[in-house]
Image (cartoon, rainbow, N blue to C red; front, top):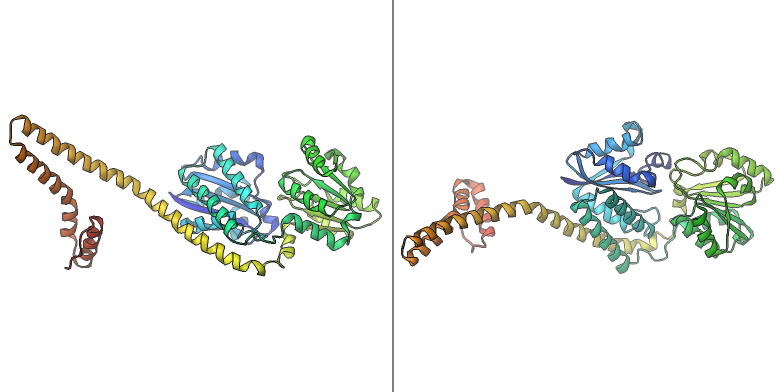
Length: 418
């Protein structure tokens, strides 16, 4: 079984494609069990975020996973094929190390991705699809990400998704402290956004979420109000800024809802930031004259400014990753050699037992112990070197020279010439 990483991300696919292959959190374990139900895939983990959907798996038939991804989402394979990448072995290891370290993110060095990778691993453990190979891969991944963040400046002066959302709102409203802000959702991304917007001291903050208890817990921390999801359409005109990030498979805010809100606001501008994949806000909303709708892909424009200052940190981080990739591949090679080592030990043990049994019989009949021990040692030596000797004698020309070097290395023999 070989290790592979297969998927698409914000570098290769537009949002309209990414949202069609995103996995709902509640269906992820079911998807993992479905993926590994075929012998073609032995182990698997799925990373699904607003910027990427990736499968990490062990297989001898990587195309099966690509076909499965399309079938699971009920899409013709041809619709996603141009956006997919497939990384075997070394490239797969390097890719996951870079992802977890924040080097492959839309926002360079952002820390949230590491938590998302850890969540993906927990889901795979829960589904029972994380075997020895992927377990070792992700433990190494977490170690590499920690080393990169602790020894380089990759996270210095980072522009996070949440900070970028505030920046986008400030493009339209000069002062956030005059605005009313609504957050839809109460997950980690919304928590980060709430923290950043709170720092700008808006006039009011409200949080709407399907779980009222979770919304209330977040609201209490920042002195915000809560709003029932059922009251969203009625309350929407009151808000100048709307930030949404839920796990809903369908849009929560439709075109008609926003049209009515804009009319009630007497066409005062409204900023809407949709950080969800699939999208929470219908994309047609962007066509309304008084609405400024931003998606996760729009955030790329915000983060360009700080890129050059972090280039040296990127060089250092890539060096760490390359070194750790070599270490992981060495572990994989050693793991592949385990069956051969076990077979070799069993072969040697069988010879030892046979020679020992023969020696014990000779001693039992009264043979000289010295002669018996001599015969035992000669018998073991002859049997142990029989295979390598035959290997050397059957090799010819250049193959013979190579065989000689292999045997010399195996038995740590002194240099010789042929």
